[in-house]
Length: 255
Ligand code: GCO
Ligand code: CA
Image 1 (cartoon, protein in one colour):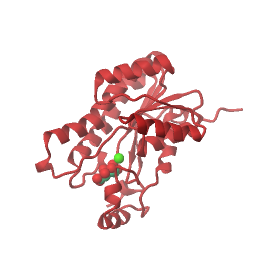
Image 2 (cartoon, rainbow, N blue to C red):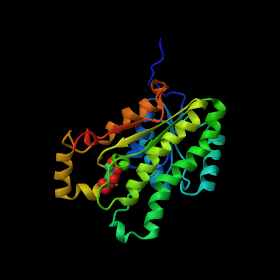
Image 3 (cartoon, helix red, strand yellow):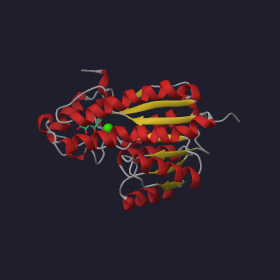
Image 4 (tube, rainbow, N blue to C red):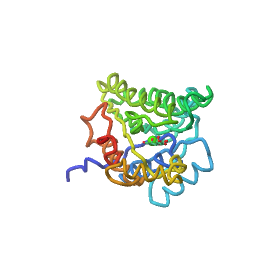
């Protein structure tokens, strides 16, 4: 029987920032398609709870709690995963924070935390896993971008800059690594109901604006991101490279 192009069985995925929100939804989606998923996050207890939830759904879930903003911790964390569990076939660079505030009053520390968490981490993790992927002649890197890879919004300066940068880093990864059999692409979510956007959903005016601004007329629900992740993580996208796949209810297609 022909192999299902979207089947991820036998593949191992490392997902950064996956103890909640988009990262955990991507892990669930890849797991449901058959992948073994390795969750990463800063809070060990939250990470274990997330993995337990996936295991209850029959997904092979492991945890690897290392600080993705520390390049030495990343090298050690990736080496430990590949020694203990086996090769990483799929990397989802999803770790991200959004610390909002007026740009003119933005402290250095806030800027640096957002850029380090959202951008440096993607470089550190991709560099660490690319060594094995290049040696094996295949691998999938999926970077969590955003509609803010293309659009700004007041008070989200560092986040917007980081998401623009990671969308271009995705193309840089394609430029360097496509020749080695890696496919490096981005998923650009619109507005989804997550912990990160909870403060926005609590604001009636923002809610009203978002539902009018989004052609689908609503917030995205996390399971609606799984299909894009499975597609970009699977053989179905073997000739897709450097692509930014918007999952945004049409938001970036209209004014
Ligand atoms: C905001 C939101 C957005 C979302 C999402 C949109 O403050 O506008 O936090 O940045 O997080 O990234 O795709
Ligand atoms: Ca986002």
